[in-house]
Length: 595
Ligand SMILES: Cc1cc2nc3c(=O)[nH]c(=O)nc-3n(C[C@H](O)[C@H](O)[C@H](O)COP(=O)(O)OP(=O)(O)OC[C@H]3O[C@@H](n4cnc5c(N)ncnc54)[C@H](O)[C@@H]3O)c2cc1C
Image (cartoon, rainbow, N blue to C red; front, side, top):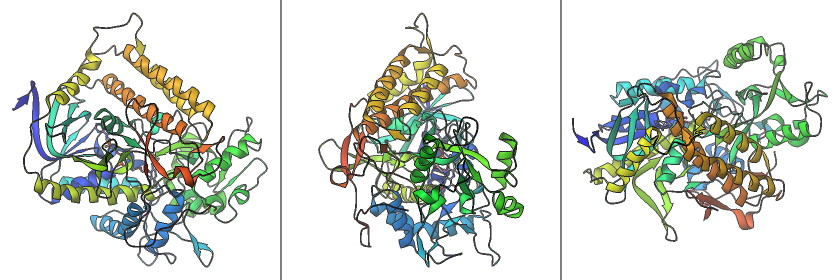
């Protein structure tokens, strides 16, 4: 086998890092174009977080009520609190029906209406423009949409002969001598052995970083590895201050109760039995967008109207929907309540509280999935050979607040768009270049970091303890409501924790399935993402979408219609303007956002 620096090397046209919906949709497109595609995933592909998506995927199919992609676009722009890039939002909403029909033809078992069409439910932030009735735009496979989607895409990839590197962990991107990206250094979790994947084009689709917060809906694997890899390659990450807190996590545990539960007619009540959302969002009520509902729950609890002995949660009522609707449309939610709470939502209300859910920020891309970074002080430029899609990317369609059902759409549309551009790119770049020596050596040194005991401190820090501390500080200092004081203190604390990483050691240096080593790499990546998030939050002095500053409590379009770009180690972000020009329709200028 060919080696480089004694490490086996494998050659491919395309490397996809991450086998969630975004990575698998891209891989399928590339494999069907007869290109050789490697997909690397640190877990077996069907365990990627996409599998956990419950509620559904948005597309203006108008199967239940009248709808139009332009309404979908407007709702998404408004939901983003006008920070989303309107060219990307138009691109996504126009492509949505096609993306869903394509899935249907791949074989995904969507729930059906009596006439055989795809079932669609109401979701948060969808327009009320059709005789006062809210659109029903979210296509669902019961409450297991992501599961159905991920399994379908995986099977299609097996059919298309995509080459999978399952349970392989990507450590760092590799640069070529021309300054472009040409693959990555990865290692097999099963054997502990490294592999260099030399690919003419690389896509990062590593998902979000929900593990930044102690209470979250995200899988343990969502540690922002791709974001940290981009930072280490000298690239910025964008809009990290915008982190979505989902209003309905199971109180005290964080697991998600889908917005689809409210879409089916569920509603929130406080200790007095009041439907309090009527006060905060008189029109959309419980289906206002997520940032609005989360803040309302916090306010109810803060003002003493919470439920339970400690008055620290509110209830989500579903019992009035009847056993039939719950069993047919929300079977997974019922299972979860029975298993983790010992209650049946057919009879009892569910205790809920907001929980960290979705990373709006990510690696900056254009609508073709190309990673774009302003080469410090010169115009924006695409990084040769590097693409990003899905939750790890920021294209940005979600701006300051994502609408439910738009992420499953984002991963499909931009997974495919990135692959389409990669196919063109590969036609023009037919040779593998030489690796940049420094980049290769740096990656190898990084890979060996956790086996190195040379500078072992007398009392080494523990990876697990550092991770727990980091997640607690992020929860306490970078949560739903923020102030300069709390954030500045948080920045100092996060920096102090990250500085202690140098003294961290792992005790187990064995090779086979050494999860301690994997967790150590993940901790480093969490640290990078924590700094990006909290530093960007400190410097955005306005309230917009999910970023709610008590000391700057309104949106400031004059000064802050811009994306933040954080580079590794920076004390403050750089900024670039929002793309406000759609591709073909008139733009939606910012107006006050009410629901
Ligand atoms: C509980 C829950 C419910 C949700 N429900 C909905 C919903 O109903 N509708 C909706 O639109 N959105 C929903 N979302 C959001 C949506 O599911 C995600 O944003 C989306 O699925 C992310 O897909 P992805 O392909 O970007 O990443 P993921 O599915 O997270 O996949 C990431 C991949 O990257 C791999 N990876 C990461 N790091 C490495 C590394 N270092 N080396 C190798 N591989 C790596 C992982 O193994 C995995 O394969 C939900 C999210 C959660 C958490």
